[in-house]
Structure formats: structure tokens, C-alpha cells
Amino acid sequence: EVHLVQSGGGLVKPGGSLRLSCAASGFTFSTYSLNWVRQTPGKGLEWVSFISSSSSSIYYTDSVKGRFTISRDNSKNSLYLQMNSLRGEDTAVYYCARDWNGVLDHWGQGTLVIVSS
Amino acid sequence: DIQMTQSPSTLSASVGDRVTITCRASQGISDWLAWYQQKPGKAPKLLIYKASSLESGVPSRFSGSGSGTEFTLTISSLQPDDFATYYCQQSDSYLYTFGQGTKLEIK
Image (cartoon, rainbow over all chains, first blue to last red):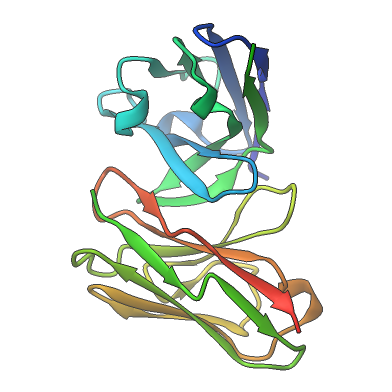
């Protein structure tokens, strides 16, 4: 069974940094692309970033370019999101999601990031 | 970026009703469209992919159709468990985008 278990959320001050992690199991991690998606409290879903299976292709939504970095460690079956220069508008629940030909077929449980002074 | 627009934003219906949610893309996306169901406090769940393919384990009362710029999600006979928020998502562009969501409420 596919499992994506997230960790690393919390409260951080504006301008601060946070690293999210997503530990995968139940599938061959190194053969799948992965994504981060976020959801502002009470609002809809926003795709944040994509990384291909070998890390050769990486994409970001415009609002996080230059501040967030997606990465993965296929030896550890883990996905990461390094978030720097955090802003209030980055406050959201962040989800990792497995990518199957553009379809997000399995999701982590979500982790809340609050950016506030 | 490709914009996805769902309608309606809120839908009130009763158990047993047939309901349809529409998703329109700002440009043609072929059939690169998925539908997700989300309940409060939970992660989204995949229902439909490639516009009309039913994800394994999803009840057959859910169906999807469309191509190009207009897509629909239909629930043939609403069950109590179906009251949730539904999102469409395009993957024609590598910059994925979601619709704003349709909240399905009990009438």
C-alpha cells in the first residue's frame, strides 16, 4: 500500500525558513515524479512544485520561485521542500503528492505551516 | 498559465439526486484533466483521471466526460458520503492548476 508521511511543519516568523519532508513507502519511489500542493485555510488547492523521478526536471509556481527548493533523495525514499524567506501568504496546509502522468494519485496527510510574528 | 474555472461554486442537493459539476479550461487541454474529492481536514482523493477514467475503488456512480476546454463530473445518485468539495486539475501544462472547487452541500 502506498504511504506518504509528512513532517516538518510549524510556526515560523516572516522571513524565516522551514523544511518539509515526505517519507514514501509501498512503491518504487525512484520511478515516480512528485509534487507539493498547498491549501490556504478555507480556500482551494494550489500546486506549488514538481520534481521528476531523477530530479532532472523541476518546476515551481511563480509565487515561490527563488524562495522554495524542491528536492528528493531516492536512496531514502524521501521528498523535501526547503522554504526560505517565508511570507504570511505562504501560510497553508502543504501536501506532498505522487505524480502518475500528471495525475496526483496518492497524497500525504498534510502539514500546516503558519507564518506569523 | 492555464486557468481552470469550476461551476457552480456551491451546489445544494439531496440524497439520490443526479448532479453535474462543470470545469472549463482557458485553453485546450485535450483530456489531461483529473477530478478530486476532498472532505474537511483530509487530503484530496483522486476520483477520475484522463477526463473520463475511473480510479480504482471509486464507485461507479461517479463519471467524467469532456475534452478540449469543457469537462463535467457527474454523480448519478448522491450518497451521504458524497457531500464534500470537488476540484478539477489540469496537467496539459507542466504548471498544474486546479479549479477553485465546488462544495456539494446537503439540501
